[in-house]
Every structure is written in structure tokens, then in C-alpha cells.
Amino acid sequence: MVRVREMTAGDIDAVARIRVRGWRFAYAGIMPRGYLDGLSVREDAERRQEFFARAGGAVTNLVAEDAGAVVGWACFGASRDEDAAPGDGELYALYVRPELIGTGIGRALTAASLAGAAERDFSRLLLWVVRDNARARRFYERAGFAADGGEEEYEVAGAPVPEVRYALEVGRTF
Image (cartoon, rainbow, N blue to C red; front, side):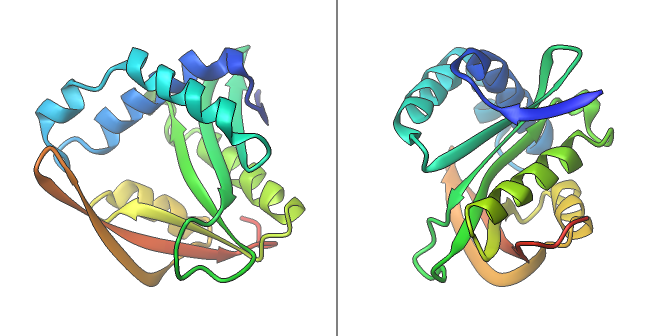
């Protein structure tokens, strides 16, 4: 039985493993293979430790656990977008162990994030998704998110990575 709870500092190593494996799985064929192969769980854990220590109450980190093992992670807070409306939140990240995709863990984390966004009085929850990540886009669309016209691009190891923004009115459930 999957349970979603707030993340603790003791979860950071597990979250780093999930993030690195998630990137390698989700972005294979989208981002340069050498970059993905070079991702380090240890370095990601160090960054997570810094982010977690600095976040205070501004960012909510959630983990999904099954039989005592962390199997997914999500985090959200206020939107970082310059054109965001007052009261807009942002789902910064959502990752599930790749072999468990499709088992309901992502849905549980999304539902908990939406409930948390409502508790924080966010009116909308925004997120950015890599344009060519069709699996993630389908997942978010099934959850009720829709592309809102926002687009941006960043670079990974010299390769352009275009993203599209999705939005969902808080209070909707799926």
C-alpha cells in the first residue's frame, strides 16, 4: 500500500536515486546520453540536502513509500515564473522509480500535491514539462493539466531542451 508523506532529511539519498534514475529513463533519446550517464546520485543528494535545508516552509517535499521504501517524490511551492498570477503555485518535480511507472504512485503524489496546493491557497498549479517527453505529457493531461501557451528552452550539454508549461485550477481532482 502506497503512502504519501512529507519528506524528511533521511529520505534525501532515496530521492536522489529516484531523480537520477528518473532522468535517465524519461530523457533517454531526448537529452545527450553522455550527460545522462554522467549524472551522479551522490552529487544530486548533496544538492537535495542544500535545497532541503534552505527551503523552510516555502517548498513542500513529498515522498511516496511502499513497504517502508521511498518509491516516488514530488515537490511544489510558489510559481517561479515572471508572468505567474498572484496565487499561482508550481509543481517543481515529480518522479517515480521507473519500474513502478503506471502503478498509481504518480497519481497519489499528484493528488497529494494538489491537496497541499489547496491548503496553501494556490489558485492554480503550474508545471514545466520537456516538450518531447510524451509519457509525462499524457500523464499530466490525464490529471487535468493543460498546456497554457508558456514555452521556454534551456540547454543540456550543448543540446536545446524545449519545455512547455501546463496549468490546472487547484481544487480539481482526478
